[in-house]
Image 1: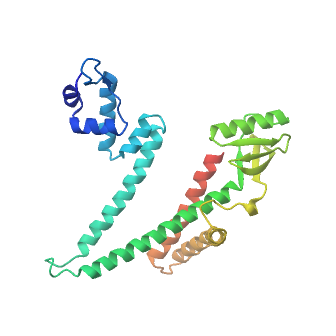
Image 2: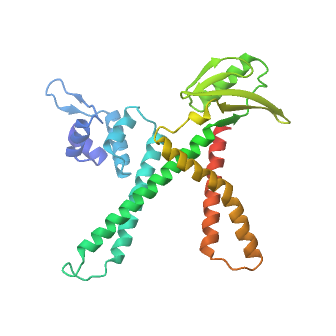
Image 3: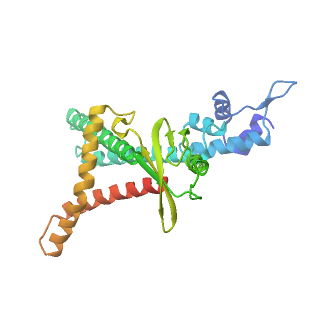
Length: 285
């Protein structure tokens, strides 16, 4: 069918159809006699897919990568969710700022003051976002120092041990290279050196993988000094938040009034850390 019929079949204007073609999202055949574009049923389906994804706000380049098989649907959707969440936060901040502007006309509005407030809040938000990102990196790096999983066999021979390690790596999409076979094998995961050993319990064997040189590992996104500071914060949080939460609960039970906000803050931070830890633990086991 021609571009007019494609426009009617998909609800996409011919200008946008040509735009998607220029962006590499579409490659219609050409009529040998007049060089007009001819759109197949596959092209129509592709255009409808593009229309749906664009309605979700997905960038054109991301759609191209998805259609070309460079990324999967779930990955693309998860990335789009994050973009939408970030956009929603920006819209929420703008909405809240609108409510703070009380002047009734442009002449009365103190533009410099509001711009200064906006810039200050944006700067504070960037600093907080960086702190959260660094904290996540430290959390992941601490948990990478030791991994554990349940093998399908008892790993009684070096061959079985190697097979279970390779199976675990394949299931979790890890780049694992065995450097020394045995009942205490050595290997690398994504370039990091590990050694492994077994423990046995009522429900079978457990394979424990530990980083060979944990003192040398620093997330690539962080400097050594910043990693050291954030790691100390991580340890203090894990060591202190549970006792603080328990003290707050005991004081509340004894009838000693505490600011509700303080209790909720301690509880929220502690629960958040535990949820994060459990999520990573479930990923590894």
